[in-house]
Length: 247
Image (tube, rainbow, N blue to C red):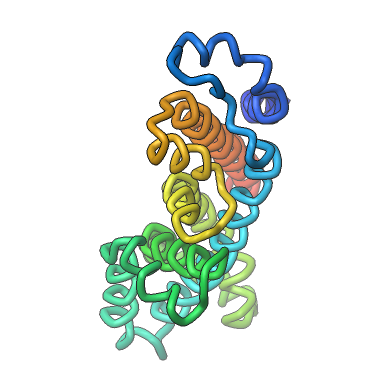
């Protein structure tokens, strides 16, 4: 229960700030005394938070599926020859600036959520793929031999032995990818996607530091909440795996 207390408290604080930001108006007036309006009101912060989380979750799910599947494929005997190619493709996705992906995707997909989803998925592939490869290749060959000796099929060895043992490392890669993409998703506001980047962009355009702070605080708090959640998941994974390893 203690493991889940930090992410729960951070989530409560995040939702509380998203719904109660107007209560901090005197504080933001102190930050930006020359502006009559210091609370971003074009859309509710809670709605922007929900859409921001939606974009990150969907892109993370698609990226995780692609990266883990690719990692599994290139660690099988039939896919070893494709290991350099898969690594290079994922590296290109990480090094290619998300803004450039948006510039190429907007003419094809139009404005809105679709281009930023593509950019986030490509940008988040490399950490998950690297950790999937590291996790699967670090497994002691004797463990796989023992599983096969028990009569397990290759699929059973993967599902019941390899993935549980590599899961902690894979989860760490997903954690890194998602945390990075929480900040990256904010640029989606430049092409019409509704994210917590909306007040940041509006603040930069209008010279309103209060708007920028409101968006930045919520984005940072969302990243902290997510990171804390993954930390709890990783520790829970370790606790559940320890008795199995002992057996």
